[in-house]
Amino acid sequence: MKGVTRLGVLLALLGLGGCGGAPRYGCPVGEGISCAPVSDIYAAVIAGGLRRGSASPEAPAAGETADTGGSVVAPGPRTVVATVTPGAPVLTRPKQLRVWVRRWEDAEGDLHDETYLFLRLDEGRWSLP
Image (cartoon, rainbow, N blue to C red; front, side, top):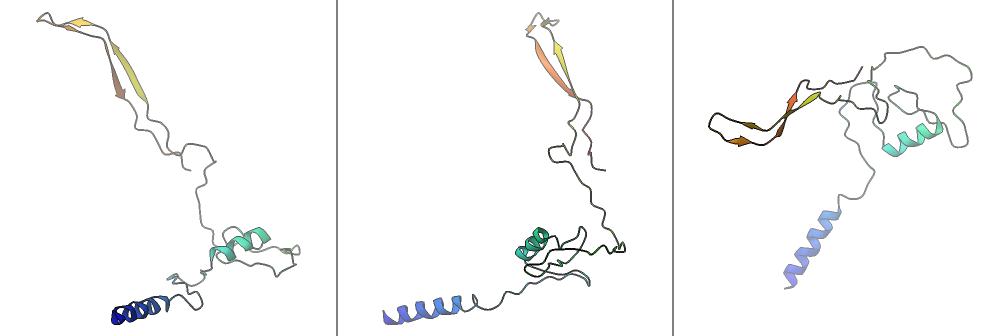
């Protein structure tokens, strides 16, 4: 019984051994792209230090504001991103036609009740630029 308890305590300690230490991020990305925690990116956006299209936050120090000082930044390579207005449909609705078929009697004298047929005329289109 003591052996089972000792084994359980040993396994618990081994399991907790990987919980400590500094966080490491495994970002297998190319040169020029940084890897940062989401909290750092959020803080940089709120502080105004993250430019659109920038790969890394340039957060100002505490108490400073993000002021460019009137300098103009030379445009670099741009990533084209399709933007969609919130609430706007990304896929247009398919066009359908509703056809009403009235009651009819076939050649054998059977009465068929009225019904609707739905025909798809268009599959819809993506409205991305």
